[in-house]
Image (cartoon, rainbow, N blue to C red; front, side):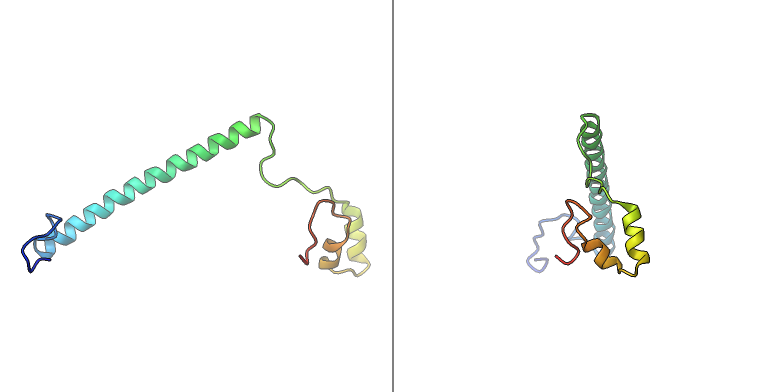
Length: 98
């Protein structure tokens, strides 16, 4: 485009030094806007999670009701962790193999 003498960006028609400085300035501005947007998203998500928690809704995965003594007994009897996890003693959990 510069061979034609027309360029859509005023700083791109200048010398290399000017192009590099202007490009760096544009990147700085864009990164600042992206950082602001990210902080706004984080604030919005935290606020929504706080509201959900105050309403009594479950945040994240529900806790498992695990019989720890049975797990210890199974491990001491020589059962592998995979087999212990696949036992039906873990209600509501998909088997480790699927």
